[in-house]
Length: 143
Image 1 (cartoon, one colour):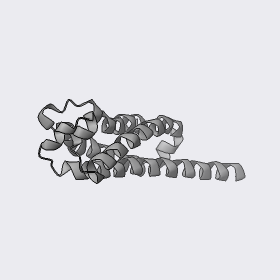
Image 2 (cartoon, one colour):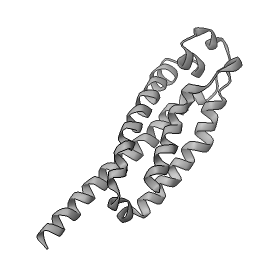
Image 3 (cartoon, helix red, strand yellow):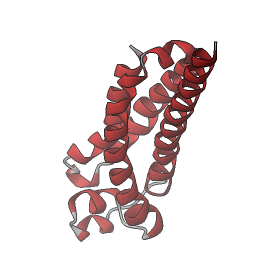
Image 4 (cartoon, helix red, strand yellow):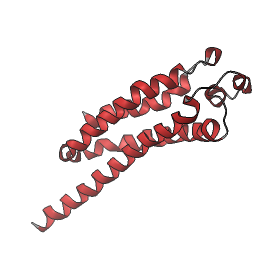
C-alpha cells in the first residue's frame, strides 16, 4: 500500500501545473507545500520504518521512477524560473510575463528547493531498497 500511496503523493507535486493563476494566486503551490509535501514525507518515513515489507513488493517502486522523473522536470522548471531567475510562480507556470507585476511571496524562492528534497528523498529510498534487495538475494543464494 505504501508504494501506491507514494505514487499519489509524489504525483501531486506535479499537479501545481494544473492551476489557473487567477490574479496571481499561489494557492496551488501553498497547498502542495503545506499539505502534500508533509504527507509525502510522513509516508516516506513510514516506508523507511517498514523497509523489509516494502522490499518484498519492490516491483511496485518502478512506476515511482517515472512519476519522480516527471516531478523532477516540473520542479526543475520552477527551480530555474522562480528560484534562480526570480519570476513569479504563475509566470513560470503559464509563460505570461504579466504575473511578474504581482507581489511575490516567499513561496517563489522556497517551493522548488523543498519539493526537490522530497523527490530526492524518494529516489534515495528507492535506491536503498533495491540495494538491500540485492543484498538479501545474494545472502539467500549463499545459504
